[in-house]
Image (cartoon, rainbow, N blue to C red):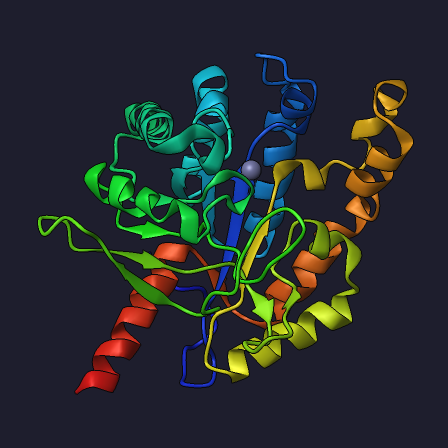
Length: 293
Ligand SMILES: [Zn+2]
């Protein structure tokens, strides 16, 4: 798949658009049923990507694929890369090695059956991999995965730890498996002080001028900007129908500035090339090969 229309030079690094496909309603209310909004919101996201000629990577939750295969098919028809976000959206440290393997394997099987292609990449729910969950990389390798984007490379209240914010290679224990390539979502800075700028709530809350400046700065440091979002961030009206059931503080935290997401994305897409994670990894591999010559 070609990297978008902008020509690539040493100073024009391709950036990642990624989307973790899950249903806020299903997750919050802990129901078994994925709501219709998940499909509608994913279509809104796909429309914006299409209008801007951007192809991205969608880490799809297995439960969503199981109940709403039409979401997966729409993403595939749009020419995007499909990878896994696990099946249940349970956190890696809660699942433990056995549960993690089962959950990941189940999601891979469902997605591969729908798309007819091998799943090779993973992003853990809520970036739930730290130094304590390093065993997860061996399991990824054993299940045939070759890359990961689960590390949040700074400590926050809920997740993350100080990790190299750029592309890196994680060696696996098993000699049969090669390595897992790691490309974390973006943070600004690589020293002690870091700022999350890669997406999710930060995409909603930070002004577009700040996001654009962060992108330029990260590219100037020779790294791709790795952005992530969710389909529900394209749905500013989600809470109108269930306002009474969700506490005000939670609604504020989850809903504020959702309506700003599309225009921020368009501004970022117009300022720099965005593509799939696999394309960016290929670009990074090429650059590393050149450096070792
Ligand atoms: Zn998620």
